[in-house]
Length: 62
Image (cartoon, rainbow, N blue to C red; front, side, top):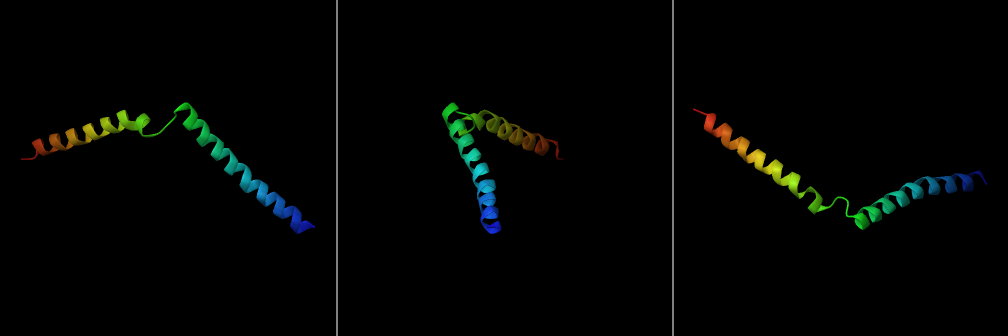
């Protein structure tokens, strides 16, 4: 009987967080949160700054 109760708790403790994660993913897709398009402007900015930084560093070398 003790083992059965422990198993039920284990299933509850692992299934509940899994269900929460799935629901968060469904909600994010529904409302368009995240995804490649959400991060595109910041990624482009980082890439541009990175390339500009390399050019400036190369220009400073003797």
